[in-house]
Image (spheres, rainbow, N blue to C red):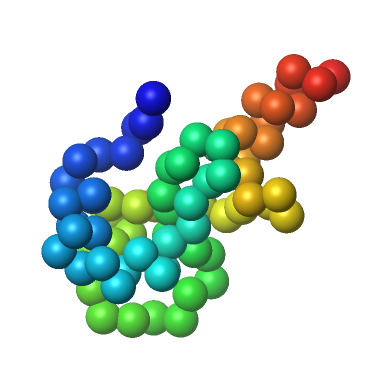
Length: 73
Ligand SMILES: [Zn+2]
């Protein structure tokens, strides 16, 4: 299951190089803008489709980290 809006993926089809500005969660495959990027052109539209998402050291987004931790505890 993915929560990624299709128009965001269409955007990446049009501008594949933008993918390097994104983090992808290892578990849920969700995409999000890497935090603390220097400003770059088209940042606004990219941010619109892909809100900032940080990954932990294992490549997991916060949601997945939380749900995995909840299962382990
Ligand atoms: Zn995730």
